[in-house]
Amino acid sequence: MTSPRPLTGQTALITGASRGIGRAVALALAEAGAEVVVNYSSSADAAEEVVQAITSNGGSAYAIKANVAEEDAVDQLIKTVLERSSRLDILINNAGITRDGLLMRMKTEDWQAVVNLNLTGVFLCTRAVARTMLKQKSGRIINITSVVGLMGNAGQANYAAAKAGVVGLTKSTAKEVASRGITVNAVAPGFITTDMTKELDSEPILAAIPLGSFGTPEQVAGAVRFLVADPAAAYITGQVLQVDGGMLMG
Ligand code: NAP
Image 1 (cartoon, rainbow, N blue to C red):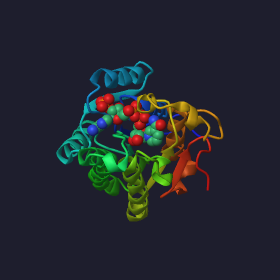
Image 2 (cartoon, protein in one colour):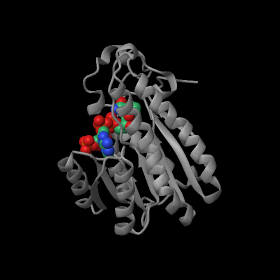
Image 3 (cartoon, rainbow, N blue to C red):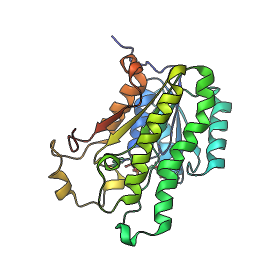
Image 4 (tube, rainbow, N blue to C red):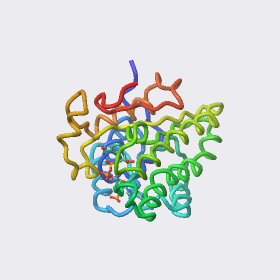
């Protein structure tokens, strides 16, 4: 039987953990015993609420504000975590935004904002933690991509391109660090009920989901927890695990 708190003694950094999927991942990894670093960019109160939810449940957590699309901010974030926790075992690259629009009308700044956070941000955070994990000869990295990065979506050329880039980044990184006991995987949610999807017209989307509903942040967090905390996942690397109600198969 696996331990109920297999991450005891480990530190996990979750980017964009103040709301939505990142919040649920933070709670799940804390429940699995990890000390959790709750990163956010503007929602200080929400991030503090996540910290409170974890600590009042006997867990350990603290919040750090950082825009993970910016190199200096990322380097400072990782420096602060290492000073405070002395180690970093798990990185969940979750922070993401959308700036939707049809390609013909898409502003260059909307392209760049999405690529800068959703793809370059993943690169910056991964590069910044790599040295520590390589030295430790252990580590788990999960990149939150999207089924949209695998199948495309009208109105989301920027988002789909960034998320597809994350898949290539995941596989390349996985190959580079595997010999040091570090695994790198991606989790690809379908449509999940969060602030990001609350404005969408759900009817046509639901028709395309075999399981017939949007997913929950907790369901995505369950997949992340499996990949980082379950000993059975130690032999899984470079993979994309879809949590999408069957929306994209094959
Ligand atoms: P969300 O509810 O909008 O939350 C986004 C989170 O990212 C917030 O905690 C936000 O913090 C943080 N964030 C935004 N910009 C940031 C920045 N520059 N630096 C650091 N943190 C930043 O989004 P979500 O639906 O949970 O999505 C989480 C991830 O899952 C994203 O990568 C998204 O692309 C992916 N995803 C979501 C869905 C879905 O259906 N929801 C589907 C597929 C993939 P602040 O509040 O402080 O800004």
